Amino acid sequence: MTALLTAHGMARTLPEGVTLVTDIDLVIQGGEFVAITGPSGSGKSSLLYLLGLLDRPSAGRILFEGQDTAALSASDLAALRLARLGFVFQFHFLLPEFTALDNVLIPIRRRGALKPTAAEARARMLLDALGLGAAAEKLPEQLSGGMRQRVAVARALANDPVLVLADEPTGNLDTRNAAAVFDIFARLAAEEGRAVLVVTHDAELAKRATRRVHLVDGRIISDEKT
Image (spheres, one colour):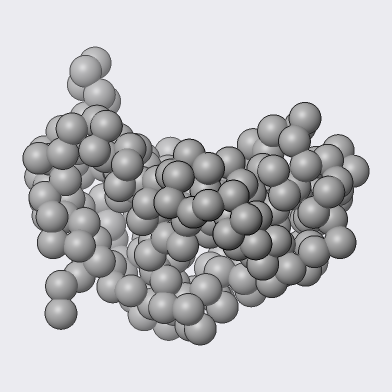
């Protein structure tokens, strides 16, 4: 079976000579819930951005569903991300002037694969599934921090991605809401077969993943299934 995502000998070095990650060999399959851990400055976010095709490696290559992404243009990469990947960040980045529903609709409308009625039905379904059905017409300022982050998760799922990537998604949440977000990620992997990659500094939350990849100084020093 073709792996969902494969990194071979991947490295990222900035023009000024700073190496962010190096010697990365990693294979991600559908249905895996992977926590990327490590101390500050270890390259966790840099690795996630490379695996999420938001940045290109300086060396090595990344295969997505068997396709060498180095052969793709910037516009092709953007289309691939929109159609197949979903992103959640530490800051929810919801547009404040749009309702929760409209925020979730943004990537659906950008892709243009669904008619308006079907697009709204999908957005409402995602909000309902995350316990936000009653908040669909509310603006972000009317929602709690945990609710706003769940809207961001719904937005990440809008185009039915096979891979969800999250960079410190619970960094601004209290313990209860952080656990709830991680429960959502676990369900996406176990019940829906999506691959989920989460950067986290929280060791207790990382234990909820089914696999932990630990970085130090830009290198993977352990890769363990839990």
